[in-house]
Image (cartoon, rainbow over all chains, first blue to last red; front, side, top):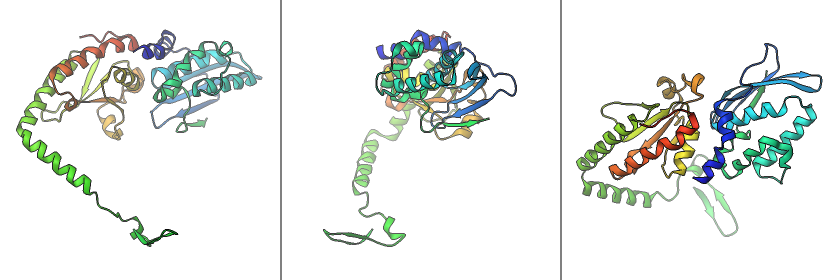
Length: 137
Length: 167
């Protein structure tokens, strides 16, 4: 049961029950939909860029607690960052949840909470699996 | 099937014969016979009565959990209970139950149209996707086993959904 408490820690429960930026952006804002037919997760991410910077980001969709919390924390983490910063963060986060290398935790901030996903193979929905299809709109 | 086998090489037969089975499932047939003998020794009527009793007991226990909705309540149903829990994604509930030593199956059960018909998906706007968990009562040999599993259900689920699921 202890590993359950690690997985469903307060931060993750909080973000899955009260997801931040859980809304579409104005009509016309670029969006992309991700769908994983294996687990049924479906997420649409909306983003508004200001030059090279993420000015606003929102998401909608459905999935397990880990899936929803990771989307919520993702939107918090990338707002205000440049495209290059976001890509670097994505790379570090992907390494963290797939157990590759040892990415710097301080740069990941709250996202480091998902490190426990490595030990839950079935709960790796925070990581787009090979079954996940993303389509741009 | 093969056309010829030597230590040097194998030549398969032509289609469709190359995909025909070789050795029949002899062990499977013997095993099936043993299983039938075992069931006959218990008596089908006894098995049915026992399963009905467990199912009735389990149904009553599950119905006492707040926010739990049973899917499929036909009078003459098999010893399987499918359910959705308000506010909890099935995969989360499945993970928690797994860690408690309770085996359930989560997902669409290869039957998405049936899920749609039982309105498992219509509720998703409010509760994300709600598919069902099958609980196979035949795995519980006694009523107290079933009872124990129900009592442990509500603990972690409550913190997941923010809803008090206790009976």
